[in-house]
Length: 279
Image 1 (spheres, rainbow, N blue to C red):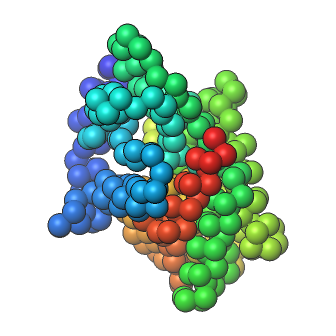
Image 2 (cartoon, rainbow, N blue to C red):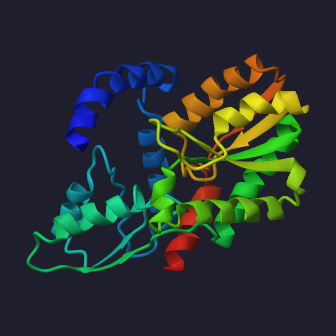
């Protein structure tokens, strides 16, 4: 059934749409922001770890360098212990678990499996919450503050939550902790979900519908932040920062600001070091 959906519905239309979106955010010199920002934060972390006997590398779930490639690199270096940190703060069976599956798929081919730790999430890690809150505060100090802060997380089919996926509840927990750190009242922030695909019911409230409704409620200026993204990518730089901004303004909004992810910053490196130390 999935093969029919992929080849009959998604592939004939999705690639062209994605290609057009990528043109809006593509870096002429470095390519995909997801790729080079992940590379940059890895290099910063590697620099911070130079004094210790730790090899730091990154892998892409869908792309290069692959998880299998990096695991084989570690094997060639005779690495005895491996820590795997998926850069998804909130756990989902669609993202984090797929990394675990890919990891085990490769290790099952080995005669000797090294000791490894798998960090499933860091959605309520104090350093992570503090870093995101500080990122928002710095943006407000530099650019001013709008009426409402929307915290947007990537959507997920609702059915997965009924099957036990903790993603929805972890997103709620993350958002509430950030709001608490910023001392926001309930009327000053909202949680929304973006990137809905297909006709099935996904997690609500939907980001697009919320943005369309806010001007009619007297909210004409919003700030957007995406705490589920470790670095900026297509879903933040094109969908949230460009497409959804146009949607909000066309609905009657007057001011719209996207607050970037932690990206390749020392604050982000400190978060990753903290998470790794607590593993």
